[in-house]
Image 1 (tube, rainbow, N blue to C red):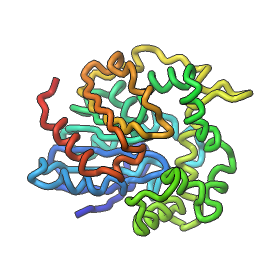
Image 2 (image 1 turned 30 degrees about the vertical axis):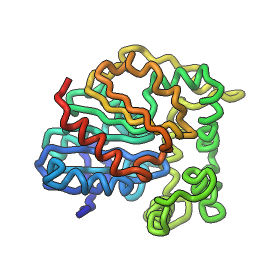
Image 3 (image 1 turned 90 degrees about the horizontal axis):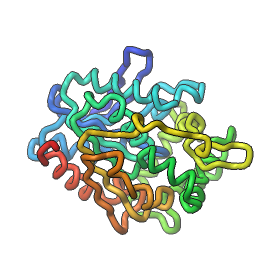
Image 4 (image 1 turned 90 degrees about the vertical axis):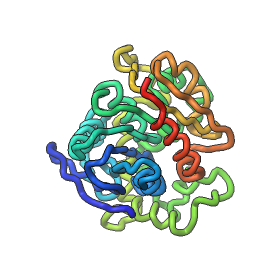
Length: 306
C-alpha cells in the first residue's frame, strides 16, 4: 500500500513523498522527471516493498516544484546543486542504507550529479532514459538530430510556457505522451492524476507546471539558438563526469526526444556500467512496461557489487 507524507528538510524545503515498505529497511529512492510526478513509480514502490522482492523501503519524492513539494519562485532555485541538496537530505532522513538510487528523465539528471559528487550516499545507481551530462553535451553541441529532438526545451524556457501548455485542456502536454494515437497506459485515471499535478495544489490550470519549466530555465543544457549559445558555451571538467558506482542504464530506443546516440561512449565515464538497449519502448517505458523495468532492476540489485 502506498503511503504519502511531507518531509521537512533541514534547509527549509519540504518534499511531498510517496512510499511503501517499512521504514528502517534497506532503501530504494526513485526520482521522477518532467512532466511527471512521484506517482509514476507506484507499481515499482509496491513491487519492491514486498518481502518476496526484497522487502525494501521504497521512497519516491516529488521533486521541488512538483505536486505539493516546495516551489521557490526564482528559477535559479532549480539549479542542479539545489535539487541534489534536497535528495541528499531526504536520503539522510530515512536513516537506512540506500541500496539504489533509481531515476528517469530530470530525476536522472539529479542522480547522475549526485552519483558523481556524493557517491557515498548510494551503493548503486539505476538510470532510465536520462542522458549522462557528458554525452548529452556532446550531442547537443555536435549532432543536428539531437538538437532538433531537444528543441522543445527552448519552448519550455519561454515566460509564457505554462500558460501555453495549459491551453485547450493541456493539448500540448498530452502530445508529449502520444505522438499519434493515445497509448494504452494513458487511461482516464492516469490522465486525472496528471491533471491534478499540472494544476497544482490550488487547482489552477498550468500552475503546477511552473516548477517543471523552471528546471529548463535554470539549465544551459539545451540546443543553441540565435542569441543564446546554451550548450555550445559549456565545458564540463572530467572530474564532474565520472561515475564510479555500479550503474544500470535502461535505454528505450524509440525515445523521440533522447536519441540512441546518447548512450554511445557512456562506458568512458561510467566504468561499472550495465547498459541495456530496449527496442520498441519509448521515453515513457516506466508506464509502458513496469514489469520489465522491475525485472531488470531486481536482477541488478541481486548481482554482486563490482
